[in-house]
Length: 399
Ligand code: ADP
Image (cartoon, rainbow, N blue to C red; front, side, top):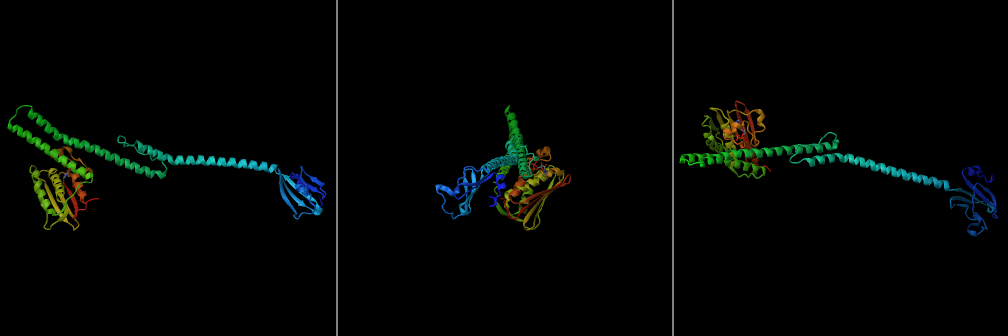
């Protein structure tokens, strides 16, 4: 074996074994823990009679892996090794791999679950607030503190929507209360006067007076209901226009004549400065007249003793500009933004006293908007007010 230069020490160290057979099948040398190693010269029961073609081969025998080599003169060598320690190591490695795979999977699942719950938590919070918002709790808002930045804009948009909803709802409630209150006053007048008249026999003159009072009150109610109906149809997008060509100067002249009596008591004078050039527009004449009447009558009613109201019209080729200027009490700055709201009055008592309903300017705004125009107010307390209305020469009804 030494002559064959086999690394005998190394073989023994690594738990390997080696067997060498003589040509006659007897064992020449056995090294290491060789257990029942079959002679490759008598494989499959047939003794080898001549040196085989092949130099050797590898084989696995149960728990052993062996290399077979044919030497000179029919000698045979087998070097083998038990696979048990390797198999055990591989089993351990397999178990280790399976355990670490399961560990990684569990970690991944736990991490994914944590991440997804963290990501979904703000949505849950927003959803809860949205569910809690109802007609009775419109003041609820999504807390922006602690919400991840990617959800902040969504929460802010929702908060904004809730705020607008709350404002619209509050306005609706206020509007209903105001409308009921406005209608109740003339209704009580009719009720009280009719009751009083019927409580005992009266003369024809007294009945006449009662009927006249009731008529005035019912006229006021009719005016209010007409205004409310107009605003309701504007809200529903059903404010229909009947555009036709006309000269704005004619409308201004007619309206000035119509409201003139309103100034008699306080000696307020009214004048129209119309110029020579025609200002023709294509618009709903009846509605434009309503705008002018409302502005002129406000100018007369909120005026001072001996005051003045002036109506002017100008044409810049694209728009007609109607201005109504008065020398009246004026409007404080803080009220200007609310003037076109329904039932908004700067001075409630004064408005009622002069027969105002608080709907005049709201109607004006709706009609101007419906024509695709715009309205502006400038005023100075104690000096007077000017309303300016721009009307397109050809009505451009809003979409
Ligand atoms: P009202 O029927 O009360 O006149 P409006 O909608 O026409 O209702 O006007 C709203 C409020 O605006 C009025 O109550 C009044 O206080 C104020 N106002 C309107 N026009 C004038 C004006 N020309 N001068 C001063 N105040 C005005």
